[in-house]
Length: 330
Image (tube, rainbow, N blue to C red; front, side, top):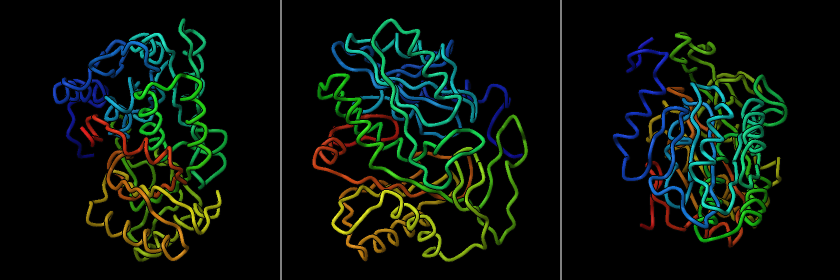
């Protein structure tokens, strides 16, 4: 195992210290328990938008803490759910008097621990679970579909709504609308290696790819020979389009995501193919996001996410955001 780390047992804490050093103007890192909060938190009168999950998916979630997105993020150990005390601390440190909305990816540990924290909090707390992965219904980590790339889009859109002053009920309703309109699917060309494990999560031959993987390296729908870029994009896009379903005339946000080890030259190539395949179906790509925004350590692979847009979602996507990983309009 070759990684730029000191001790596998302290890799998350060490990385959080580095995040604080790099972005002290945007966020504050607390280590006991581990919570990343906006530098100006709490923002009085504003709904706090909070998310979190296991480390190893950076920049999700800590990289999205800041103006126009998250008020706090709770980083667990690598590929491990944050604890209830982390989530509770996030709620308490961002309590501006308007309540908190928890954005929870659909993994059993995340759902249970965020729910427990919500019950313990003194302020009003509501939760929305995202389950946008069309690859499988159930997996090792979850009952039902997994929460994956759509989480990034959800955090941006709902974060913008909270920043403009929407109340807790409105933020929750918007979040549920986004969850109902977004679908994702990913593939892997290689596995990843969890630092404290020290060996790949699964084995793939040089001529194989895993279609429908999860962000923790969970197996997907099937293992097939590596195809062309066009074939790979179609393997992901076709199930997404069929699931909602998406149709001619739809306006969408297309998010082409690297799983961590795929270079941008390949990602842009894949994105261009996806845009053309959508255009061929009469689907208009109104907004785009390309890059490594929800990763699986050093895994080579990609995921595609489609969000069916309406005018309000477009306006909120375009609203200013200033975080370590996303920033525009500022």
